[in-house]
Picture 1 (cartoon, one colour):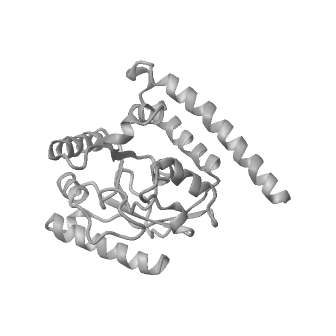
Picture 2: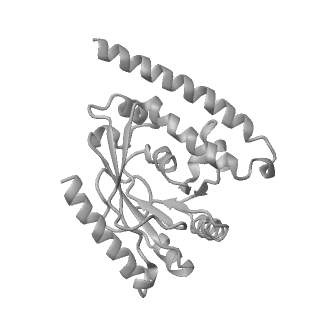
Picture 3: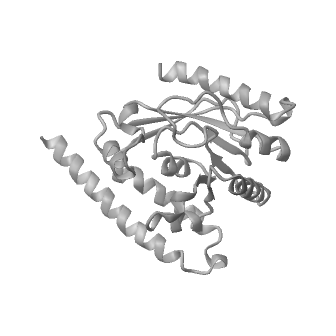
Amino acid sequence: MIQSIARALWLLLGWTELIVFTLLMYAMTFLPPTWREGWYRHLFRRWSRTWLHALGVDLRLHHKNAHPLPEHFILIANHPSSLEDVAIPSLFDADSVAKHEVRDWWLVGRIGAAAGTIFVKRESPESRKAASDAIRQHLAAGHNVALYPEGGIKGPRLQPAFRYGAFDISLQTGVPIVPVYLHYEALHDFHWGPHSLIDNLRNIMNARNNRANYYQFDAIDPRLFDDKISYSQHVYDLYEEWQARYLD
């Protein structure tokens, strides 16, 4: 009983913090872009952490890399839940790639756009090309980029293959890929399936186990590969090994 009351108060505090911070972040999106360049992205990372408090998620980053994280990278991850949209930027200084629909989400879409999120219509070849060009521009400007090579949330387990976009860009730019494997101990509570985003957030808050484990591995040098197909397959094989280790 006492634990339930303490958790309820903790979540209430988290939602109060999130609502106030969100309104401030939204108001600051109306500042001229040159005024908020740089510092707004750092505030966005802090704002992302308030989501974890509000949802009651125990997020742990496990450093499985033998070598330091490179200063410049393309981060990739599997994508079983909506939580990644705030959990990844809470841990890594990287501009995210998100589906175009997120741009229209109330308050959140405008905040994400102001923080440097790249939006893409996955079913549109023109939009995918524009997103690839935007990723290259962000990388050329010295920013890191985070994306999901499965092409969206398709299921709690890995899809049969990765899309080639991230690997093609890595080969062309020479920027290494940093793979992160995401594991939710209550996988089906965290997974965003056919239900709404609100239902997914509610399920996360009520999860039987609130632990989220993010495993960071060594960066992968694109110079080791001749083409995007072999590059993608090599990384996908690693993800299958991690899935067998941490999920199965």
